[in-house]
Length: 395
Image (cartoon, rainbow, N blue to C red; front, side, top):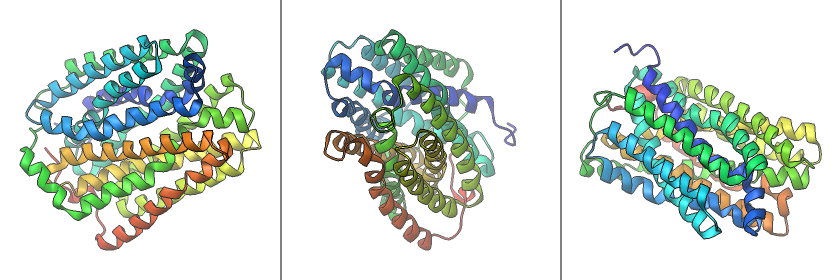
């Protein structure tokens, strides 16, 4: 296999990530519609973000341990079937409790899919391209924010939010067909035994890397999950205009993912610190721009760049310290991302329904990322300069 080019299979994983990412983030666009339809507050609707994220946090590692005995191609396909079922249930949900349950079902698939998929993607390319391969897969999340989330928001406004979940299920089915047709059973190695994978978590550097992800990433969903109410209530955007605002942010995510992938391959420690500081600065910039629509558009675009540039660095840092438990470690980091998302969804909803209101969200969103920056600084002092070349990636 020629490992100097990006294999087609990685692009297929990107397509699957697009479907899953749309399901995860589209709540940010249809949250006001769901709240109105189900007669709940926007803060309560935001708990759908928390439920989805907690399903990933808790279910992801457990499912990965159970599924380790099976062929990865079959596992990835099975996880997409679960994802599709959850989103079809969301489309048919007549009540808030059932919608919560359906989000949990869909969320269970995401952690193992991204954890296993990122290891498979890295194993398909040369070591020097591992950051770009992982970044390419996660580019599906950024494309979801450029196309999937605005498109899903538009569908929700035109035909009702239930239609949005039908569309997400359709994308999931297309991804499933391509996974079955193009991913080969020998495109990856089998997972290490469960006991071997669990031993990796005795490494304090791995545990520190997971904590960094939780703290440094928490600011993203605190703002992004409530971008629609912030834009509508504090900056005066219409619901229709929010669709285009999400497109702008999504383009920022694409740029950020590309910058983060290349900078992580060049110098992982420096990239981790740089982009985490940049995200905090961008949150403060958003807070300062709430009264000015053009500046708000520009600052949220910058926020998208700074936020998603963190993703490849955080995932590669964990994989570097995963040893022979890379698959479980990578999935655990997806759980760490979503623990941050769960807390961000809860925190943002609490602030939105509280005395600070939407105005306070960008500022409150900086608190835990500040702790993350301090942890990154300390950990960088303990690590020798390294890239993913030093990591024993699964082949």
